[in-house]
Amino acid sequence: EYVVRMDSEKDRLIPLKAIVDPDVIKVHWFIDDVYVGSSENGDVFIWKASPGNFQVRAVDDSGRGASKSFVVNQFH
Figure 1 (cartoon, rainbow, N blue to C red):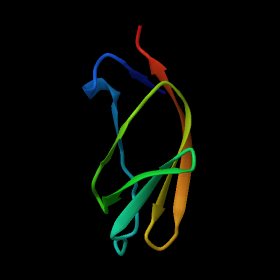
Figure 2: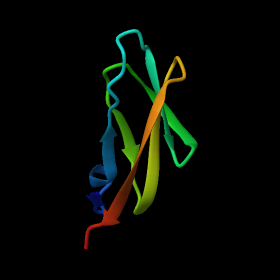
Figure 3: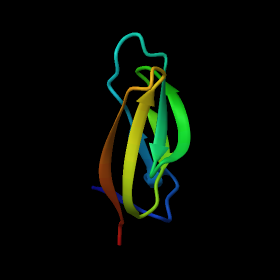
Figure 4: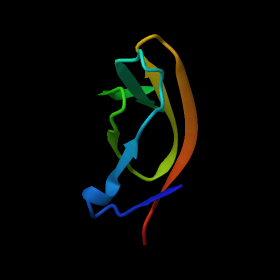
């Protein structure tokens, strides 16, 4: 679970990182099956969050992937 402050742009940024094989060049990121960007192997991808339930999926440039569900709640 992540808790974000909607009035703070900085607090809405969630870092995503995948551990992949050394031969991978890029990791492609999907939130709820929507492509949101890519990162280089070993780099962090920053996603601007909003409250809700999400499925994040990381797919490497060879088509191997993994996914994880998570919740983002708004700080009150």
